[in-house]
Length: 210
Image (cartoon, rainbow, N blue to C red; front, side):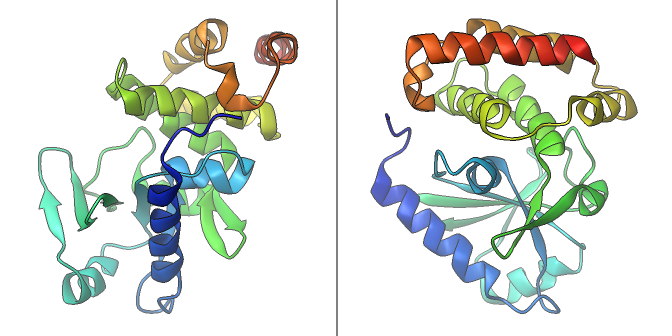
């Protein structure tokens, strides 16, 4: 199966994520979103960069004391650079994601010692990222993550539609159908063309059933 990112970069990124996870929760607490969340659910593609959502705005204080934290007002996030690896930090009541950061606490669970956003909410967040990055290398990786979530997770499509309705994101549904129908990079899913077609048809059927 083809790897999307260089393995040296993904291993370095994974080490950084593990290190920040060792920080005592009373000092710093976060939820894994983005590509690493997709990996923790699917075990398919590791990520180059790290995306996390803070449990509380007060968690920024720890980061300010221990890292070269930068505020990105344009993209409504905070950033820490570890040479080639970027840690993007989304804060409650500041960052603007399809699902408000302050709501992600109730849409997360524990996976391998990490607090990770659930597949349905992750699918919504990934779609938001994909729409922002259509046509780019990272946008294609977003599509790969979306497809791996659909094929390797038990996504509750009723919950997915509930989230779309709650956050007025109904336009995400036809975009998801389009991604499934037009996705060509099946080599990143570890599937033969026939297996890919069968899984694609099954995913489209499940979406229609809801």
